[in-house]
Amino acid sequence: MKLGSTLAALALCPAIGLTLPAEPLEKRDTVQGFDISHYQGTVNFKGAYSSGARFVIIKATEGTTYIDSLFSSHYSGATAAGLIRGGYHFAHPSSSSGATQANFFLAHGGGWSADGITLPGMLDIEYNPSGATCYGLSQSAMVSWIQDFVNTYHSKTTRYPLIYSTNDWWTTCTGNTAAFHTTSPLVLARYSSSGPGTIPGGWPFQTIWQNADSYAYGGDSDIFNGGITGLKKLATG
Figure 1 (cartoon, rainbow, N blue to C red):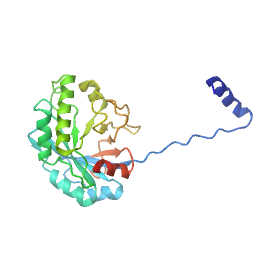
Figure 2 (figure 1 turned 45 degrees about the vertical axis):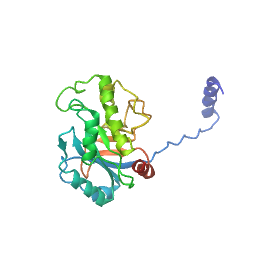
Figure 3 (figure 1 turned 180 degrees about the vertical axis):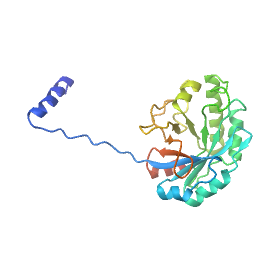
Figure 4 (figure 1 turned 60 degrees about the vertical axis):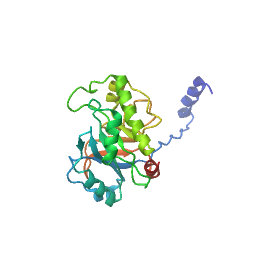
């Protein structure tokens, strides 16, 4: 049916007393989670699980010189509470190669195992906390650095790491590259109640949305884009 005919038919409905059925809104399953670091000295893992959380991402390393002092205790606490858990690495692309930082991460908690409760590691690549936003790298050099990290992690674990970033940083510092959208799941940061916003880099959707910088049981709030079966699939590969 052509658009003009369709609009004419719709206009007639009130006149002849017909009510068009409302299209039901599809509600997609989601799973609550959170992410933490040494800044959260006390985390209520059991409380989080009881409230519905099922995963947590824990800071393990930064650059090639920093190991999070609470990673081990956080990891043990998450495991004891029954949470699916994984580690993350805060990147410093100006200090060493992607491969060097991936290996440092793997050596200090960032690995993956097919036990059903371990997420692939996450590369936290975002605003420089103490210098140039893009760490002094060109867009092409940044993409190469990320590729070096991703390829190294994959070669050692058979899994591609999650990539955490924001739409603004990704667009500014990588030129909105789509080089990773078919391999590394996207963890998108956008603090909002209205949704994750623009998805960068050719990814069709975010796998995890960091929707708030606070969570009742510790750290930041994360929302997995799917049900528990999908979350378990992300863990098992």
